[in-house]
Amino acid sequence: MPEAILEPDLPIIDPHHHLWDRAALLSQLPPPAHGFDHVLRRRPRYMADELVADMKSGHNVRATVFVDCGAMYRLDGPQELKSLGETEFVNGVAAMGASGQFGDARPCASIVGNVALGLGARVGDILDQHVTISGGRFKGLRNSASYDPDPDVLGARWRAMTPGIYLGKEFREGFAQLGKRNLSFDAWMLEPQLPDLIDLARAFPDTRIMLDHVGTPLGIGTYKGKREERFATWRKNMSELAKSENVFVKLGGLAMPFCGFDSCLAEPAAASAQLAKEWKPYIEASIEAFGVNRCMFESNFPVDAVTCDYPTLWNAFKRIAAGYSASEKTALFSQTAANFYRITL
Image (tube, rainbow, N blue to C red; front, side):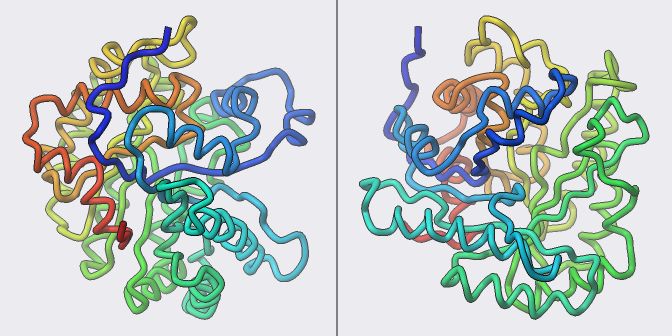
């Protein structure tokens, strides 16, 4: 039976979700061997209709931020320009929302796209093209640096080919173009890689950086059974990262398989009380380090659907935040996201 919605009037801006239609890809996949294969099988389609249905499933989700996932890249043209197709596509969804077609819901109010910063200084022109074709909705980009020497942690299809991407000279030449355009950077990496982001944030103190998924704690592969053992190292790195005031944190992504929580892929699905208990140490430690004005809850849908549905996920976050004041909840659930991604409702 569906859970009753907690605090249904609390305004929410969901600052991290994707859109995709990957039915064709499913036919090419072998039997599930890794968590992301399960994601594709559970939610092979997540487009405007599915997103808005989640936004209207009980919680007061006012707006969302799309984050790149390789959706609708251009088929033709130079490789470095193919991601413009994703921005064009998502901007169309945003325009549908702005027209009032979905009522008060404003899906994809801001767009986080993808430009390969490893191209160096010449990415500036490409960034300008993304801003132009989005009508100004393009607010930043994400480059994943996720890497681990153990192939069982990420799986072959989702693993960066080399470690230390954020430390590279050409990457940083490209990164320097963001601050010049008031664009932000979303970082996705794994917990052992956090020192790379600490170094990057110190090198570019005037560029706003968002750490996705509280740094993705690990509890599978080589790290199976070691997540709690590594908590102190994660927490120390998060505290060090918080010293750079240009860094913010998304509170979520803990439903993904990487963390190895008992709730992931559980049948029947875990209730919000169990999710809150599992996730609370990471979320509370992040808020303690960064403060509510640099933290925001995120859905990471449809990826986190491997563990729970959308209403249950936000119930879990509301359980974790139950002891916070009204102003602190406003920051965590909407205002910090609105400020970072420059969303006006």
